[in-house]
Amino acid sequence: MNVSGILFSPNGRIGPNDFWRGIILLVGFMIVSNVVQFVAPVAISQAFNLVGNLLPYPYLCVYGKRLHDSGRSAWWFLVILFAFIVVMTMALMLLPGWDDIMDAMADPNVVSDQRAMNELALEMFSSPRAAIQWYGALFGFNLAAGWIVARLPSDPDVNQYGLPTRNAGAPFT
Image (cartoon, rainbow, N blue to C red):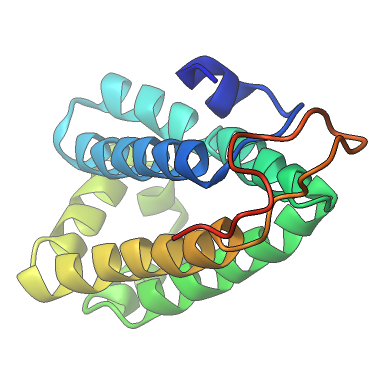
């Protein structure tokens, strides 16, 4: 399956290898998007923020097709999405500087000033500890969730989601 089919079509099935290709592309884009949001001018930052907010859809497509390949509904993606939100929120709350962000968010003047919020976020993420902690949580979650979903056995037969993928029935190794 081609890259656009993997990332943007919720229909069909994909095997573990195509699943990992999609996850790697999405994580790479998420990291680039995060970095650009902090260092680019406001207009570019807002554009990347908008695109970053749309990332759950390609994640749904990639995970959904892999779940389809194992004979499961893509609705199971909601469990993965909820776990991601919980893990990343906990990682964010543990970052040095989180209290400063919360104090700034209580001030309506600061919240409405995108540049001030970007400066606070850049300051929070500027320490090596914060970057390791944040991106470690991001990689760790994607690796753990991806490993679990990639290990689901493929349905070797035609199912309601489509034809079997290559090496269907064989677990991912």
